[in-house]
Length: 351
Image (spheres, rainbow, N blue to C red):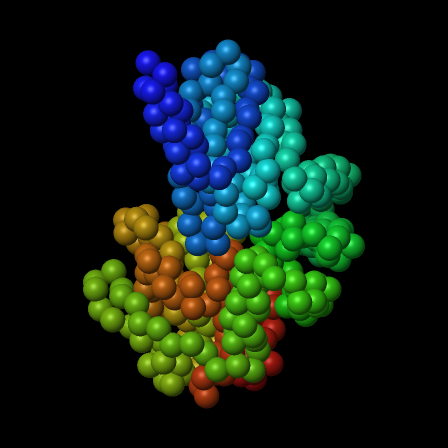
């Protein structure tokens, strides 16, 4: 009997010693009885499922193997409108949530998470302060005032990152908002981190390299996409045949795009005979909706579809509408032209 017990103990110790080191996620959730909780790791390019369990008696425990201390994790709770992102740094995490009150979510974890909590709290407060003025500017169709408010909020974010460059959470925040940051500002913020090693800094530097290739004065990047009839259209063929070519990224479901289409149409009708051409690049997934929008908005220039985002990726398209103006030599001479700015630029170049 004692011999058998000895072997049982040896086996048990062996199992413990062979188990992978891990950290725990302790969830306390109100109004979520029997709901599922799903834990995943978020990499730069993917979301990797890690663990899942059912909430019982208002609690759930999940586990994740140790990995890079800078890894981001995602918790999705069935029925909770918002998902929960957190930076555990391989330390046990406590998450308090309420299915009926997403704003009550609280994450207690690492120093990085504490900084992320502070950032989210401060940004929420600042947004609430600025929101009434932003609504007023929108009501008055004052785009300049609205943009100034957005710039003020972004500056607040940039200062937070600059003042907390001793923590990799700031790099995570910067990576998340890099597309809202002017390139010069982004480079300046990155310089504050010195020789810091970070997966987020690597992603930011890759983004900067890509953006520099799309700056005004750089050569355009060629691509080939198909029309609705399956015909190949090569951007370089259009560029070489016209004095100026506008590559216009848009979609049928994008309200700002639809509002901007009449401005592009007016510019096309006014300057087409002078050598101005447009290539519409839609990111629509639905052929029918795409073609309906083309007909409804009377878009009479060549239209291609970027269903797999291959061209959008080449041109780092994060928001639509987005456009690039290219001269006949293949040089990017302007980008992001909207409203009166498009006609003003064309008038300057084609008069």
